[in-house]
Length: 332
Image (cartoon, rainbow, N blue to C red; front, side, top):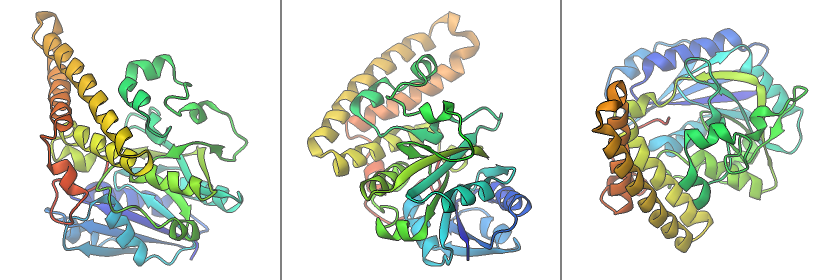
């Protein structure tokens, strides 16, 4: 078997169905299998997915989170290479063929990512990133990214580098579409189950690099990533905001030490407090007009992050510690 494609689903059967259809229509000349792990969906996902032709459905009795569910899918995989793919993605052209060819012809590449597009077909800049630091986390914002897109702070430079069909080296690539040789995945210990959702792809790339593998981005392969469909069902950024921060905190604990992790938390307290004050002031101004809904949405997100810095969102920590039923399933 050339390739095992592993998809984790939670209440996203409509997207997963479109994803599978795009794989089957755009991927040719490869021996591949599609494995869908249903993460204890609460809707009719299993009924819909079990009828998809050419798909092996694994039903998890409980919501394991993204990392554990992918590891569960891997246990049934027989491919020489693995593709971890979000259910809310659709191939634009032969993306999988291009990635597979690049991976097979590039010795030393341990992880390969592709260009991700938003639903409106604009580039999703998060498809390549730098590893988090306190500085880039404190300064992270769309405004600064647009003004300084090639700054090392964000790790987005590969997006702007022309290639001759090969991959461009990056620090890390998104787990929404991530291809990796089976032997590399096994060597580094699979996805770390301490991450319930978010940062598990970052941690995997980090360990692959430590083991001597290269992380590469293939801009010629494009996939639409509608983004965060599972998380939107649980409050959108009010869920993902503090959960992302908790996952980055976990990464710092593992890779930078406890002192660095708690310093990050203290800095994020100051950042969140400033943002809450600014957004709160802007939201009540008459001049805000049509932007009031957006401002209030951002305000709610940053209030949740502020509460997280104070330890008032304990659910974010519990999700990484237990395998019980959590509030959200897939990833953004």
